[in-house]
Picture (cartoon, rainbow, N blue to C red):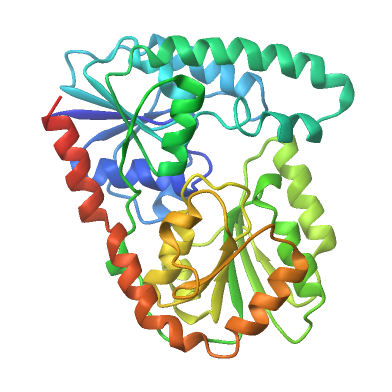
Length: 360
């Protein structure tokens, strides 16, 4: 079966992009996107995936999103492929011309829906009226294009609930693929690890402020970011407040990332109402306990007290307490973490996707 995958942008490789690239590898599919950074794709271990650009888009919103939507709306590959998978929120318009299709939803576009108020508070007051108009317009577009999607799957119960709330549709939960066989345990070393996109709702600043008060502990933050102005602004803020016991790495090869997981003491994430959260599972696949907020998809992947700590109403003080507690004996969590990670393998994910395609 010839399959094409649509993903909005491939110039910044985070969890969502890795899902699409993994899908392409497992299904022998081609990936169509706008901006493509082949060097970053290769660094993350996907040199064998064929990517095709439908044209470049700007780096800054709102033109980035609107032009991407327009480009995907014009794409028509029917006859060239037998099936289509949409793997990105600004690529939903591709569903109009490309059927039969399946949409794998990482989340209904967060700045339009569940993070609307959060995003609105972060932008200058004089732009909020335009943001409201932009939001209203794009909500209508999303609803319109979603009617052309035949099968809807998503990464967590958390995301499934958002789809029901905002789009009035149901979706099949298929947790994202974790290539657990590529991760391994070496030791619980002398540093904590954090892997995130550098954007404000990931709340990486909480981690830095906590470690500023723990000069005897070390934190390594691996943080990718886009080239748009608001991403650069948060990146600069993180760099400005970074204490000396925190190391910030902007881009690493996959082998280096695996090595960091293998040798860290434990893993920390602070994202607000995360869709699912692949990085904690990668940490558990490396035998490392996780500190995370008790919200979003984290409650589906992390077993509180067995594979780490889930913190209600997380703040820097509670991060400090968790670091001190977990840090006393992080090795004791190893076996439970490894077992938990095996529930989210690439093989399980791919099998469930294939079943949905075959049942169409």
